[in-house]
Image (cartoon, rainbow, N blue to C red; front, top):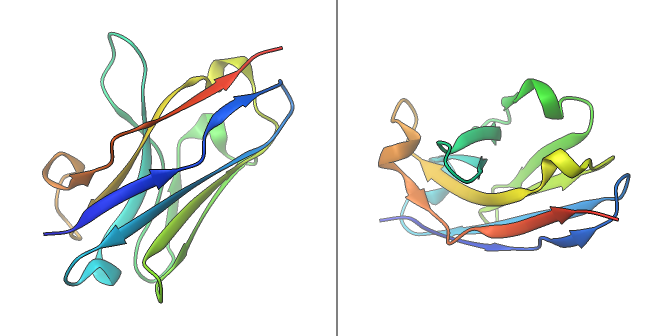
Length: 119
């Protein structure tokens, strides 16, 4: 069973940057697709970005060109570099680890980390 632990997040001014990190542990963690999701109050958790074990990435349209996801397969880490942050990027961000072809809902979730973009 894979487990994930997030770090990073916090308060940043509009236009600023933050970096979220997530460590995945467990058997075959390096084979999992790792991703970041965001959940706003009253809404479902939605994909921000994900990356599979060979480095293929997928991004939500509203973060393309601003956010970059990367992974370190040696240490089973995934990072989300967030640049040019906007107030609407505010939310709770969750790390997810899932087996390929499996729904994120069936994967492992972190506890969530708050990102607040405000002046």
